[in-house]
Length: 132
Image 1: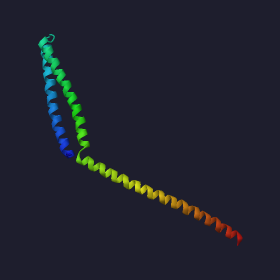
Image 2: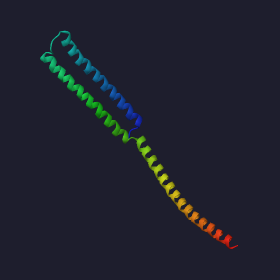
Image 3: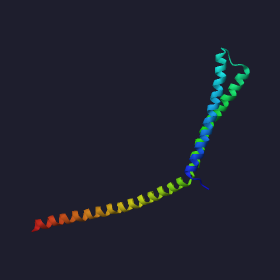
Image 4: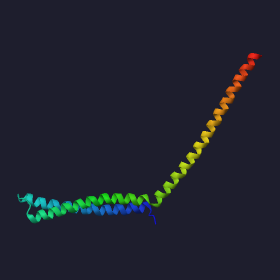
């Protein structure tokens, strides 16, 4: 069953907020490790390096999750009821425009024919006035 576009957007926003919170927590933890070593004027310990690397990897995964969320949201929106309705409306408008175009093309042909007839009549009238 297709979801409503508003529902899809709300779910995506909630998920994005959760990911943003996770990203902030990871950044704070990374910064804390770096600040501790800096404040103590030393390099990271092996344990801090391991933890720092784990946090950086998790941060990278969070960034990838943001990209995937965007893709999945767009994909889900594409199959939403609102988008399907919009697509159907656009197809209807295109059919109407195509019908109007054919009608206008027929009118153009009629106008060209009428113009040719009127041109012929004008030449005939000019010929008749020269005879009179």
